[in-house]
Image (tube, rainbow, N blue to C red):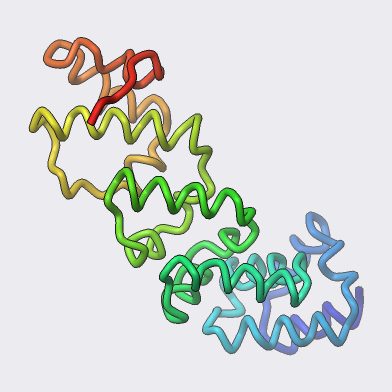
Length: 198
């Protein structure tokens, strides 16, 4: 690991962050030195700050992928309408979105675009929402939003990201419990017991 630790130090990564990497993700530091050096240089060129935690996270993500896998994932996002700038911006904001399986990405994008009328550039600003379970979180919560929007109880331009990232308790309090009197079926919709029509 020593040569790779030296690479990080030479790029200005604080020792405290390197120690965390050694204790929690030592496998990354065991990568071939030339490949590791290449990845660190690429991450820095992308605009990541070596003193920030996202720098190490980006290195870890790229180290866990082959060049072929990386290029393949880039192609998936391009095919979905993301520009190179949007792909880079998404990676800088949420590096782990590059680890999401192609199938999960495609299903999530299809749902957001066809069911929620989201544009690809919007999703690229909040790539973390693609990491959530479609069945367990995205569909139940979006179904609730659709019902509330249809009844004029919430704005149609409501940002999805805070809704999907909110804790279960907060979501229930704000969108389900709060509206149960006006929309008695809202809990059944959330629990998937009532199919939405139209």
